[in-house]
Length: 130
Image 1: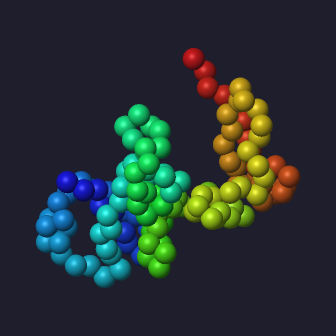
Image 2: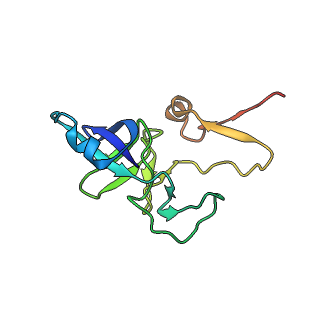
């Protein structure tokens, strides 16, 4: 069994685990394709079950995620753009316009509306309560 991404107009809309024969038997639809993905490939590295790079061959840059992008020309998956001014690096990871805060004991999430109002702000600390 293999993991396939259902890609419509370049966006991943679903993931399935199937045999190639099953995928080949699906009805053809305009602007839709099924593309093999590897759930163990991230940041152009292959990872083992222990969560560490295992030296295996990475496949299509990243594993497909629902809502993510498949660039057919470059034959690579990457996540959807998280904010208007974010840019893709050479490994197809989105880089924020403001670096992630260096605060080891805190967690932050990106707020693009805040950044669009004030280009010096964007990361907002969020608190988890136990």
